[in-house]
Every structure is written in structure tokens, then in C-alpha cells.
Image (tube, rainbow, N blue to C red; front, top):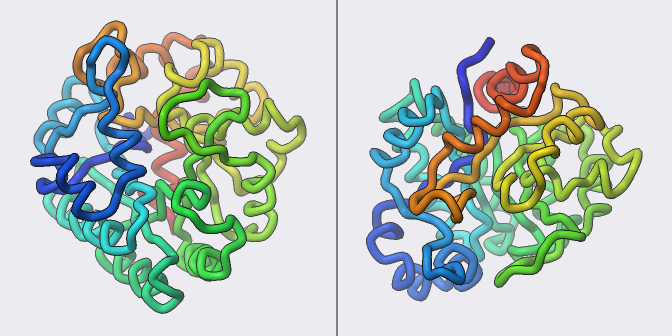
Length: 297
């Protein structure tokens, strides 16, 4: 069995952590600021801004052996490139604890997008994500996006996509992500292994029969904020344990009523207490992520 892997973690470059609001204003990343700099009704921050050492400490506290660093659905190609270079340095310094995937925006054009993806791959990043055409302002069938997905298939790079439940709660900055778009993407690009974040917006439960595409996987990022604790058995019963990856969405605070600071421990405890069989839990907590992100070939 693989060690415990958190397949959905975010981390930002030092200049972002130093002044998130100022950085976002200077870089034109208003959508990110609207989501990540919000405060809850009690005044608590929606998420934290730990540095690399803070992430490693959180992993140690939770008993997480490896984290997969997911990018962000930035609005500007320059922000994507900066994130990718930062992640390349992180995995270079901590190859035993961290894996990473790359982000991109097609707004810079075909050649720039393909160059960025190939450069990130050469630097050791082994996937694409977390992408969101609906949030980044391009169509799911955008021609540049389609070419990048063809490149992802050729390089055996899994692709993580942001998905919201169409019946989920409203919150500032929420963007609708029609579930049918993801079914079409999987059909259009059968060689790409898609990981639909946040339980895939409950796609296989909202669209019965849509769980069939073998190139669609799901992660559990932000589970306590989007689903009830019974989701683990219900969802795995619908799609199988080999299609679901544990992800926390750290440094998002998944338990704001219990924790002042974000962590991974409570979500791991919820997964382990969900009544899954040993082999199911092993696949969920590490085996599936290892196959997709650590041994993608």
C-alpha cells in the first residue's frame, strides 16, 4: 500500500503570502482574491497562507507522507508561469514529500500554452490543474485548451478540473460548471485521465450513468464544505474505490466551526471512519494518487 497522499493541496509563492491582496490587485487576479481572501460571518479567514515549511508541518501533524501541489485557475498566463516555477523549486527541494502539477491559461495563445506545459513537464511537474475553463473565461472546447489536452494525453499527464455541484450552496465567487461539459471533455479526450475536484460536483449522482467513462476520476477536496459525511460510502458505491482520490484542499479551512487554522487531520479521520474496506481505504488514501501523479507513465 502506498503511503498517505493528499492529492489536492495549494501553496503560493512567497510574494503572494506576503501581501495576498496587494499581489492580486497588481497581477489582475480579482477572481482569486474574491474566493481566497474572503472572511466568514464570524470574521475568520476562509483559508490560510502557509509557506512551504508550514505545509510540511501540517503534513507531519496529519501523518501525510506526500502532497500533490495543485496550481490555480489564474486569470493571467504570467501568474500561471510563476506558480509553475515555484512548484518546480518546491519539488526539487523536497522530492520525497511533494509532487506537483502545472497550470496554464490559453489566453497567451497556442504556442505559449504548449511551451509552458512542456517546460513544466521538463521540470518534473506531472499533471495539469487545478484548471477551470468556466472560471478562467474560456470554453470547455476552446481550441487551445483542446491542443493542450492532446499534449497532456501524449505526455500521460492527468488533468484536475474544478467542479461545483449544481445543487450546492451559493457563496461569493461561485462559478457554475455544467456537469455535461465534463462528460463531453472525457469523451472528446479519451487518452486524458481527468480528476474532477470536489467530488466532481457529485456528477455520477446528479447524472446517473455518467460514472461510466473510465478516464474520469474524482477527488474529495473540501468535502466537509460540499457534502455530508455519508458521501464516502455513497460515492464509492457508485463509482468504485479505484476512481476516488483523497484530497483536502489545504490551506482551505474545511472545519471552520472547529478549527481556527486549516489542517488535514479531521478530513483524514472522517475518511478512515467511513466504514470502507481495507483495500478501498488504501486506494483512496494513496494508491490511486500514486498511480496518477507519482507514476504517471
